[in-house]
Length: 217
Ligand SMILES: N[C@@H](CCC(=O)N[C@@H](CS)C(=O)NCC(=O)O)C(=O)O
Image (cartoon, rainbow, N blue to C red; front, side):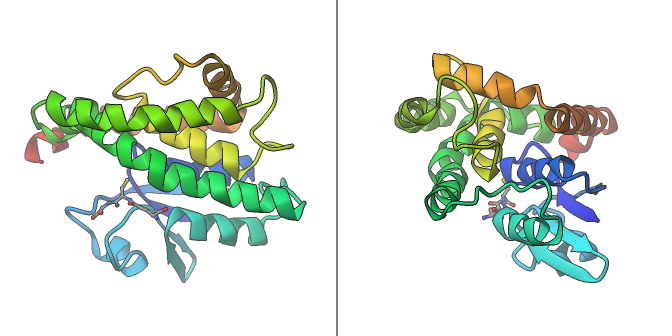
């Protein structure tokens, strides 16, 4: 299975992690919305990453890809079984993908991703504005995180989506300052699937820097 994208994106990281948790082998194909290849465009008509190609079947959108993988590879389940927790898992996914991601993007892009990978100057004003918006979301999250274990009764899409977004935010600010959130994130980061994806991400960032792609913008 191919995933198109760049793993500093929380959505791309989310799909890589879901596949890794399920033991599905993935070929990560570097793709950016700015310079889309024909293959990437075929899978993602609106140039958003990630996109997936599983043989001839193509699908964009991290949550759509999650639903596909959960149905195709049901074990280990990444959606809890009760109706209540299923609803909550989708809400955490939505919270991560919209409320949290909106600020993560501004903080991470203006402090790290733009400067390190695209040759852009640090934009502290824009990063600071985004960071102010991140705090209410992080405060709310701190109240949801349990002292031990996961956001819901089992490790699920909820943990994956939120942790992936925090990982992007961490490129530009401290996301472990809140104690429950910090400890929960460290539990998530200790999972073998997370470690494997983090290694892929670090390697792709180093390769992008070394090849000078960032200078070309
Ligand atoms: N709902 C989508 C969001 C994907 C998304 O916004 N991806 C960003 C990268 S982090 C992107 O490709 N943006 C390019 C654009 O907006 O043109 C998902 O879950 O995959």
